[in-house]
Image 1 (spheres, one colour):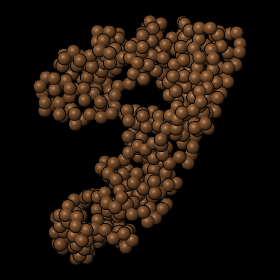
Image 2: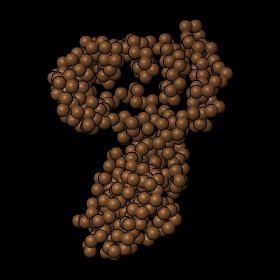
Image 3: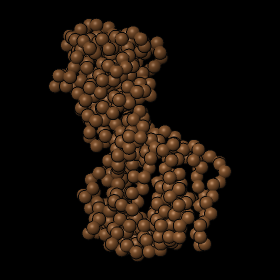
Image 4: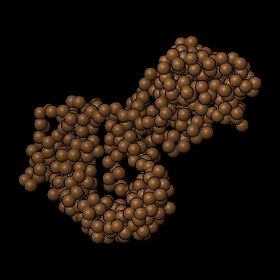
Length: 463
């Protein structure tokens, strides 16, 4: 009898990241709040309304605007440039792109020798799909700061998106020694677009050799293999693709992340990092969200998900149990999903610890009790089993919520206790219940399992 965990009666098969809807004032009509330019040659700024924002975010924006207004009241050009730039960074961090653009433009006009403002403005244009403007702005920053490798990679990425491939190659080649993984990734993309497929593969392999977790490169390799007509290898690469990429640390852009306040926005920021395979940064954002709102269930669930990806199972389990204690109904499926993931990775003790903790905190949740009972009855690690506890849990669930899969869980527990004839009876009940529900697929599955219980020794094998 092979070990199985079934997603029955409410459990889910995958651990997912959850987010709350973003609440940004720019999403709803509101009266304009315009700050006229304090001197000639500057742009007026239209500010986002603050009423619908989290208090921490609204307070942050008010503080920054007050700083700008104080600087505007003085005659100091440098102070005003810094105030515009600082406010632009805060607006940019919260994705108020139009207001941030005006702030960066003004900062650049007041301090034309400062390279941060065209750098950030170019990134803003890149984010919003204004690629020609991004190339011009990033190019200006690059000329002012020729030794900035991350800026070269970013400009190269924009050139690739514009199909300006020779210019992109020049940017990537300039950082081959300083940032080899990012440079090889970029040169691979250039070669791929030029249909130089063998060269592209060489660059992608070189990038992966340096950053094996950059699993998104497997998609690019698949396209190169397809270009060479090697379709089996293309399919193999597609099967290995993931979300991780090669990221060139860009201190100027990355500093925006530290400016975000407010639990919801930090959860969203972390979720974006998670989706991109940047799990350490995701953990940092979710931890900051918890610092802002210690009772946040989404922050704890998402933090647990990111910690799993980093292999920090003890902390992941602790965070998931804490989230479950705060909101059992919302988190039950996530607890089961994490237990299934731990089981798939053969971490049966961790899975049992997670489910046992959740069962102690909030007894009687069917999906948690059933999954725990199945693990205790048929874990491949014999030392983890506890047939008596499995039977107790399984009978309670079946008594409250009769279901074919729950009857099967009772049979598994009885088999672990060596009570094979009773186990076979319960399996027959499960088959009959499935027939009564006219669930043909479940009937077929349970009938295929039934003979395993109709033998003198029916205990699931283990080690």
